[in-house]
Image 1 (cartoon, rainbow, N blue to C red):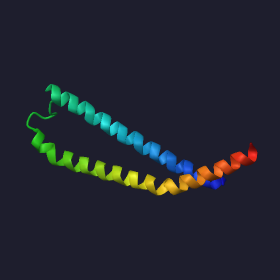
Image 2: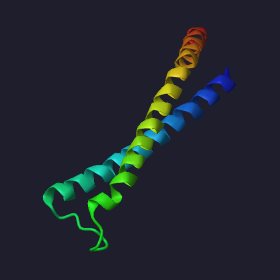
Image 3: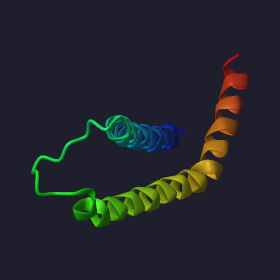
Image 4: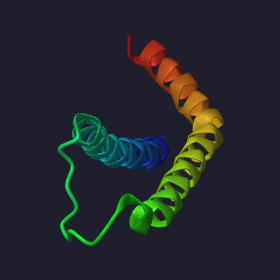
Length: 97
């Protein structure tokens, strides 16, 4: 039972870490959008335009979406495992209480 709990905690920690990373990326995007909307977002190089970076932005956004889908699929696969741990904790709680 202890091994099951430890394995579950590693999966939970991985989800927390992934959510934190995604949250940071979303914050960065929100900040960039805020400056772009206000018209104060300036290129580091005066010869660059948004079009120069558009393709890279699209690739990065698509990769973020795919990574998020993978994360969600991974957590869905853990659902039966979490139910198993939850049921065993209930049994353990009944035995102790």
